[in-house]
Length: 265
Ligand code: SF4
Image (cartoon, rainbow, N blue to C red; front, side, top):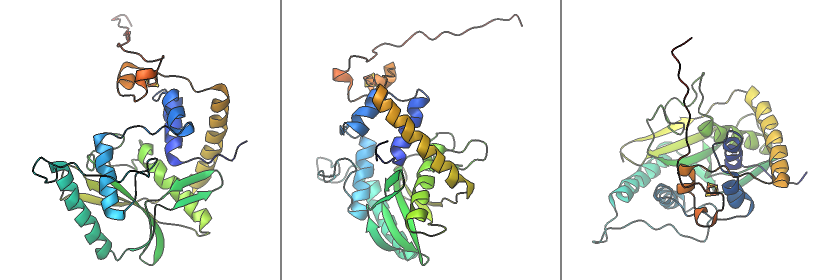
């Protein structure tokens, strides 16, 4: 078995792959071959916001200094103007909660797991991890990436919670302590007056479970690398895929979806 480490993003992408929601060729290009996909406008906005807050350069593209979008008159575009306001909110929050930043963009590892933290800081006298998010879904309950009701007992939003579990799992083992608090600081991209701080409290049993998930993910990843990732084309996925120009597996038209109906029970 290789010493390849599992990040929370590869964990989520592999889960999507298993569930048929992601194309293996895209995962391989990005996570194995190191292809840097062009960021979307929303990602560019988030990267600029984070850069303005912490000075961190974009992940997977650390040569590029984020630049804002400006209007012809030189002013920031409306979206960037909103996030400039949010940068001020972020700085005010640091003061308000007396957050003492220890490191930015620090790589942490334990066992098979690795992660890059946005901020490690002292909060209330305790070492904690803060993850910055710029989101248009800050009050959204129904989207799997929406920030409302993320720990619903019947339908927890694992696309969001996995990161908290993963980082807390690494940090508590690495720093040899019972708990390392993990905070999401989420800043709205649609309302400059709105932001949230969510502290993720994770049940003790979840850490053992996460360790098993990591082990299984690693075995599955190694096997898949050996056998080869499969293409999972779909019209919509391929239309938004940066590899589409050269991909032989791409699908350009909608497939026929069958529905079965009978009134006879
Ligand atoms: S074009 Fe479609 S099949 Fe090809 S890599 Fe992209 S998503 Fe996969």
